[in-house]
Length: 382
Image (cartoon, rainbow, N blue to C red; front, side, top):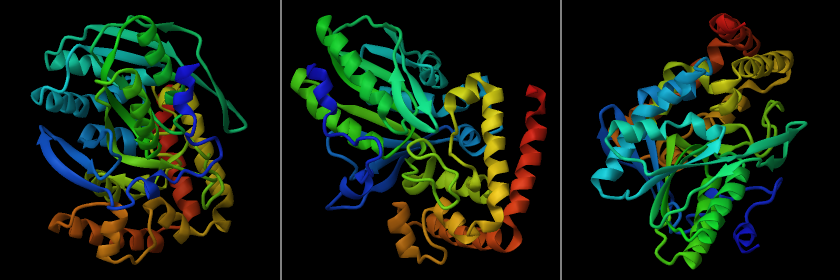
């Protein structure tokens, strides 16, 4: 029962999340590049939370996964390998990892190549734990989680490596207290969590709360390293401008912090900006490809059916996370990026591309084009 109290006070289903607005009452968060490893950029998220460290990593391969819903199957995991490996190396060089264990949250966690990344940098993984945790969704709403299997072997002083998609945060609400309770009952202890995620701002609120509570159990607990691929996104709190988004599930940019590399990439392929979700269903993309294809096609078909009634400008602004014509200083505040010459060029590029998107395309035509492109590319899975 004690571990269940860890989660009291966290956001309830349907409650508006204000983490991004509240977590830095004194200073705005800032995305600061600390290094590059091979082709991977590593950023710190400064002024975000107090108990943990938060990072963004970006690589050409992870960008392919995030920007192209045509990327499916085993390729999904491999797209995350270069940036995962680079960040593991970054932590290893700073002696941040000892006695590493992997905790697999099935099935979403299998999208993250933690074991392969460790092997590639010569890191010995001491143990791998498993738990199943499947969302129960009815009428587009998460109604609960289903845990049917677990295998946990506890040791002392473990650095726990986890990969999972964090949308509503419900999975973490179940799984982190579960593994902590098992470790306590079995006489083990967790030194820290290293958590790789395609996820959003809700991760901060959850991890900050958990760290406070876990320190009461293990005073030497060092907290979380949370690593976001390509950005710290947000989930839709409602159905969005178009009315077709799924609250607490679909990821977007608005109110989040997106890596400059991703912003540049999307400006090169601007129609990618209009996808329903940054990642869609990660499990379906990896293991149920036909279901993923159906979800993407259903979105573009539904959007095409209502396109004449959608405020296209408001739709694009929602996807970008700010209103058209924003000043450079306001853009920096909104995006949380540093004031650099390259970011000034990026701001100018976004204004030009947004204007071009509005002038050159009709939403119904975009829907038709994306349906044709996507179904043609994915026809091999029929």
